[in-house]
Each structure stands twice: as C-alpha cells, then as structure tokens.
Amino acid sequence: MGKYHDLAEKIIANVGGKENINSVTHCITRLRFKLKDEGKANEDVLKNMDGVVTIMKSGGQFQVVIGNHVPLVYADVLEVAGITGEATEEDTEKGNIFNRLIDLISGCFQPFLGALTACGMLKGFNALFLYLKLYEAGSGTDLFLTAAGDCIFYFMPVAIGLTAARKFKVADFTGIAIGMAMVYPTIQASALGTGKPIMTLFANTILESPVFIKVFGLPIIANNYTSSVVPVILVIWFASIIQKLAKRIIPEMVQTFLVPMFTILISVFFGFLIIGPIITFLTNILGSGFTALYEFSPILMSVTVGFFWQVLVIFGLHWSLIPLAMINLSTLGFDTILAASFSASFAQTAVVLAMFFKLKDKKLKELAIPAVISGIFGVTEPAIYGLTLPKKKPFVISMIGAAIGGLITGLLGAKSFIMGGLGAFGFVNHIDTASNDISSMVTQFIAVGVAMVFSFVATMLFWKDDEVTEETEVQNEMGVRKEVVTSPVQGNMMPLETAKDQAFAQGALGKGVVIHPTVGEVVAPFDGTVMTMFPTKHAIGLISDNGLELLIHIGLDTVQLDGKYFDAHVEQGAKVKRGDKLVSFDIKAIEEAGFSVETPVIVTNSADYLDIIETDHKEGISSSDELLTVLV
Figure (cartoon, rainbow, N blue to C red):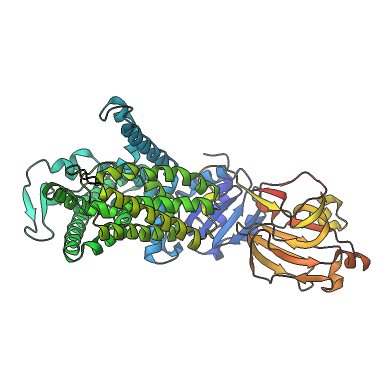
C-alpha cells in the first residue's frame, strides 16, 4: 500500500468510480483522466479535497491537479483502480481506422525507442567495422556485436508483446509470454522447414502452403515471427478479449494463474492457427502479384516495389519478395526486385534528416540523428517507428522518394548481383563480378541521390511540425520540460511586485514581470494563438502551442483611452510565430495623456506549472531576449 493510497481511493470514488475510468495518465503536476461520463465526477468535493490543488477540464481530459508528487499518487491510483493507465477504448479514439492503426503501431514503439535506436546504431557500426576488416565475420567480436545490436530487432514480438499488452489492458507478463511464444525457435518456419511436410494445403494454387505440424489435430501453417510487428499486436488484441472472458468465468480465488494460463494458451494457438496462415497467404499473393507485374512492366514493378517497400516491412510482408529475388539470383545471375527497393532506406533517412531541422519536440530531435546514422547503414526501424510513421506525412514522402528511386533503377535497368550488405554497404551488391560492370552501381548512386534530395526537400517544404506532442508528458516516470518565453516588449525589466497595479503586484493574476517599454511595439513571445484581443487594444491574451497562457497588459488604466494611440496588427484567433508584431502603441502620446506605460507580462495559468523563473532583472531587454523560463 502506497503513501497516497487513501487519497487515491477518494479521487477514484469522486471521478465516478473505477468503472467510469477509460484511462488515466499523468504529467508533472496532474492526473489526467479520460472518463466515460464526466457528469458522474463530483467536482466540488475534489476541489476541496486535501491533497488536490484544483480541477481542470481540457482536451477531453478530466484533470486533477496534485503537484510534483503526482507520480506517487498516480501509482496508488493504478493500484486501487486495478488499471494500467493506458487508453484503449475505441470510443476514446479519433480518426479513421488507418490513422488509428498507425497511432497504435507507433504507440507500441514509443516506450523502447531509445533502446531500438541504440541497437540500430550498434548494427550499423558492426557492419562498418566488418567492412573496414577490423575483425573477421564470425569472430567473437562480430558475434558479440551482432547479438547486442540485433537482439531487439530479432525479438521484436517480445518487446511489442509488453507495450501492446499495456495498450489493450492485458497483464504485462502475459503479453511478454505471448511474444516469447511467437518467437520460440523450434516453431519458426525456418526451423520446421528443414523437415519433410506432413501435408500440403491448397496444392498447385497461389495459396499452396506446406504443413509440418498439427496441434490438437489441426494443421498449422508455419511462419517466421521474429522481427515482425503486426502479428503480435493482433494476437495481443485477441488476448485482451480472452482475458476479459476468463475473468468473468474463472473463480476469483484461482484467477491469478488460470486467467493468464488460458489467455496465453488460447491466444498463442489463435496466432499460429489464424495469423500465420493469413500472413502466408498474403505473402504468396503478393509474390505472385509482383511476378505478374514484372512480366507486364519491369519499370512499373520497380516503382511499385520502391513505393510500398517500407509498408511491406512494417507488416512483415516483404518476405514475399525475398524468395523471388533469391530465385532470380540463382537462375538469372541477377535480380531487379532488390535493386528497386534499394532507395527506400535512403529516402527514409533523408526525411528524418529534414525532420531534425523542423522538429519542436526536444526528445524526438534527440532521436533523429541516431536514426539517421542507423539509416545510413540500412537499419530504418528507429526512423520509421519513432519519427516518420507517427507523423504520417513524412512517411508518405519517403514512400514517394523511394518510388522515384525505383523508377530510375527501372528505367536504367539496374540489377543486384548478390544479397550482401545493407545501406551504404549495399552499393557493391550491384557490381557484376563476372564482367566487372559497375553500371548498375552507378545507377544506384544516381537513384539514391535523387530519392534523398527529393525526400529532404519535400519534407522541408511540405511538412510542418504543428502537433503538440505527448512526448513532453510522462506516464510512469518523473521528468521536467521547460518552455521559454522571450520578451514581448523592448525596455527595462523589473520584478512583478514593483507594479503600480496591486492586482498584478500581489500575483493575483499569476506570476510574471513588469517591463517599462522603450519601444512602442509588442511582439509574440512564442508560437501560439491570440486568445483575446481586447477591443481597446491595450491588452492581449495569448496561448502557446504547448498551452501556456500569457497576458500582456500595456499601461496602467489605459483602458480609459478606448484604443486611442494603439494599433492592433492581428485579430483574435490568429496563429502567430515568435517575433510576429502584435500591437503598436505611442509611448509619448500615452504618457502625455497622463498614463503610465508599464507593461505587466503575466502567466495567467501559473498554477499549472512547477515553477516560473524570471531572467535576471536588467535594463535594455530586447524582444529577442529570454524573459521567463516555465518549468512544466
């Protein structure tokens, strides 16, 4: 029982009970509930409850403001309510099925993006060191770095088993166990395929599938689930249904072990019986489809492969083309499928490089450069799942860039002659060792260059990071971010308590500072929206893209001027960028009319923040200088 167990019980009771909670997360100061019915919450009781600062409702969330000890309260809320804290109910989701699927997939990767990126870099450096012949392939060093770098990619279903379980409210270790079962070595197609099939389903058709084992008398079509993403998510979703049913049926005294037992047993069986065949059938259909497309038009096939390659990788369906490529290499001595897909990783890398210059979220920005490094070596998972797929448009741009690369390889007839290295080390795969012809490699340099330039430029021109990301909020650990407010007015800065207006001086409207203007101009101190433009133009209310609310009040009692000597350059509701001109005013005329022009700059939602730190009070502050640092 935690320190705040009693407070957690009271909060849960007054938000309508645990049955009224769809999900709960927390930031640095608040519990953020998504309630099924906000009308059931007892707001008055919560506002006056010891341990609760206040209640707020915003963005579909019922927010209980606690303070900086909120992680401890959050942990007790989860324990008391018996929930995981993740939103899963469909009625809380927004957007179409496609967007929800993308958000689900990318959301499953968010908790381990750091480890994913780190492993991607290790894979890349190992490939580089092997290329430089610092050690031999198969040596102890190679095996060690391969294990360290490839582990999270190979056992991807285990990691996603955990994160998807939290998404679908399945017990954590049940999700992990399901992921482990799906990558168990002896039941992979690569292992079973070494034996003799006991039967063949759909023989002599496009869906022909060998069967190596039966389970409970039913034929199981083998598949390789290592490194896969979507299959385990589907199985965990199914497991969430089984877990709910099991909890209703199984007596409470034995639920601890029987619920996970039946959930794992039924879900894993479902995965092997249903998911495996679906993937096999789709793989066969895609393989036949690309073969037919190649026979119809090699150029069209190259464009299609380039465009869809990363999508096929996400769903694990790119394996449908690998056997075709291997057959081509063994029978023809060359292959065009691998050549057509070669630009895809470089297009993805170029997009992420462009995103680095435009991202606002510091954590995502920190991920971008390592993702670029691993992408250069052909490891694109950190780029896809951490950056481009969650943002959607950059991913589409990378697909178009890869398609352009595929078009060039198709038009110029580029071929792959071996299945060798990835990324930058893959160019040599396009040298015809029989004749020492390097024309295909030269073509790939051109294709990759064009694909990367297009992807970089298109991202810079057509993508804007408008979203306020959730990366600045934490769900299970404490962290602090800051937002910088630059001075909206040029002049001399003083402490707020020196303000002549006592409402400002006493901090009744929030924390801030006072500026005595030397230039009659107000500019935007951050990117945001004009929330309020007073008709008299003497005051303006702004809200930043991250939710910080700021009041800029020009002068003392200047409302009496009724707008005289003031000019507004923006309207209420306008989007503004840091530095945009908002209001002009005539300092001399206002003072001659008998009014002070001292300008309080106030964070009106100060209670939402851990602290608001003023810059050192100084004379001659300009509109580009840092004024306030707000800790969130």
